[in-house]
Image (cartoon, rainbow, N blue to C red; front, side, top):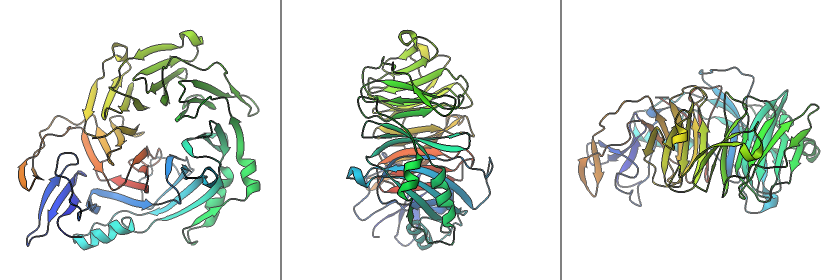
Length: 444
């Protein structure tokens, strides 16, 4: 690599490093610093991470979820192990797959001082090599969204596909398959036999009139699901005794455009929130009649499509992201007044995913179409951040960035979805056009 090198500082902000006798690092902030030259690339700094690993699948995955496991909560010891469920977006419908992936051997980063060592780590995915194993289930059609829930002894995944169907899959056999591969087996994908696949499909709902992306399990009422489509309809599901699925054929229909995302209250089982391309966020009380179920509408919540929402587990807060590139935080105490309690402008393109940390009520993660994944902490105080930034060949004072911006993670193209691990504090996962990243930063 010729010319300048890009590194990151301890806060995850990229640094420009010039090779000209003596090394001088300069803070590099996406969207503020000059554009990278054709012979430059960003090289991650292992010192900013406790863990970092990258891996690819045969086809890009637009959506994934982290599976619950039996290894215990609040795990912080290395190596780390995690199981994911994901769905592909192949060019041809017949080539798509559901995957259960096991990541084993996530070791703590051992930062080296030499840039050559850092470059080697970056090429290898960082730190000591982790092993990835996967079980595949052939699936007809691209997978728009996947959400997982433990129901009794079963790991059930709800899948929104581009064939206008929402399907439920029991992934237990897939998990057993991937667990049986073993760490000594080379890291490759193992397909599940077709007879197992037939047994895994629990239920398929063809009642939506269009495909969709909005999907959410209730965290308070087992077996309760909501699905939303491009034709503005939201259907409510519930599992009855005996494992039968009942779907209310009277959908919620107040939205005027595509339902983009859904989130259930973590404390009130009757409250559901939705966001839409009609620029609104709506709060529903599913106990009420359908005509009266929409109890609050936030008009013009964003200056464009409202793409994603996340409901805070510990505080009455919602975070939303839109096509206007803005992140907004809403309080349930004041949301009826159409006023957000905080808004952040950093991303340069539409927001693609948001999620509150399950372990810290003030921290959330977001991603955008500008290839950035950002970590935010509402508890951080206003502070002037200044330093050297290289722009147009010169130096100037670094413009102020949001003080709540905690970390910038880069290195992926078209980041689509982000998730935290509910049992491993600070462990983050992202999926993009060019694969998955797993990381844990030094400051979360």
